[in-house]
Length: 500
Image (cartoon, rainbow, N blue to C red; front, side, top):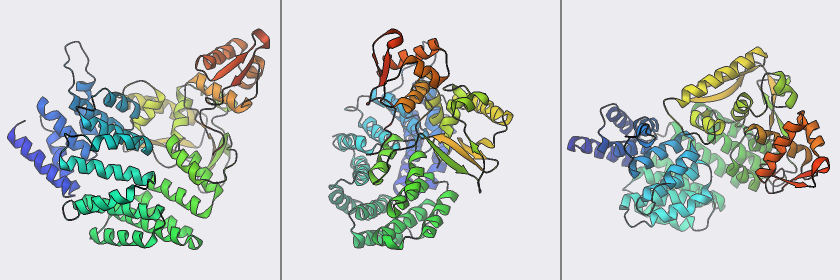
């Protein structure tokens, strides 16, 4: 790498450590627009990833990591790692994980760190813990790299409410105070969260007070996070004084900043604090992530049996019920169950809180296919266009909008969208099997019983049942017309219908 370019990257690194992220982002964006030499690629992309600008490594490294043609050169481990890290940031988790696992973590510990980030982005903090522990024990790390690993390890320990978090927090606060102001303030916020979990109210208030003083003029996300943790601390200490208006004020701030996960976090905390069963159910149904659903289940004390569908009220007032995902309504509206348009609509309706990113949607719509920053967005846009046309033809009060590279569902008039509690975004056979599992649960059923539920001919139904047998979702007893099928408890349906 040329000395001039190396110096500029060192300057950007210094800006990041000093917390001047705006200046650092402008600088790396400018460099990325220039001609990038092969030996510069991984370092420039690493810097872009640190600044949460995944579009730079995706565009710079796509043809390097996913080459076309027999004469293409093999990507370096560094290039694979940075490309995978960018994929994680845009929601292509499976592809990113596979790429990172192809790199030798013993030789390249950053691959292990990025795998941990992949877990954290999927709310799988428990799986991130051994990875982060492995990373911080790597002998080749610089002091600063190890410190970053320890800070992330602390975040995972706090999230999982592990007792060793308190000691590690105290150690890291000593190491960062006066040297790394940004990291130190981040640790203070973790201190508030940790104190809240252990009901150490005074300690939490001290951490919060120091964090407020550290952010001399907090704005944007800094101010939002401080307000959120102050709200949580205040109401957890005095739950009888809970005021919905206090939560609504922070919600409004989160909406204005487009920080959707804060909205989800606020709803879950309020539901736990007030024992609001309806709000618990709303958060659960509106959260497609399995690991986050487990978190909700751990806080929801009396859930009972979950319904197969949920009525999602949209708009400012009551309106007609729109049953987009029932068998008859899917057919009537031009969508074939389990095929592209109905699966896309199911994906878009799966998260009540935030828009879904292009890579997130594509990885569910086309499982197993790799993300291409040049072609995937266009391909998805064409499918969305077809879905919009079908919704308009059928005069449904539903629109699919795109903003800042993400898609979301809006309504043109008040209505109630009846959505499935459990995913209908799988392949056609998986959707049909899930429909059967909801109908029969653990009860034996015949082929003719399945024909009645699915509304299909006998041979098509048998194909679905055989696919279920091959996937170990079903057991069959007997043969011919006397055969009886039963779903295996460990596999069907795809998620538990009761919360433990």
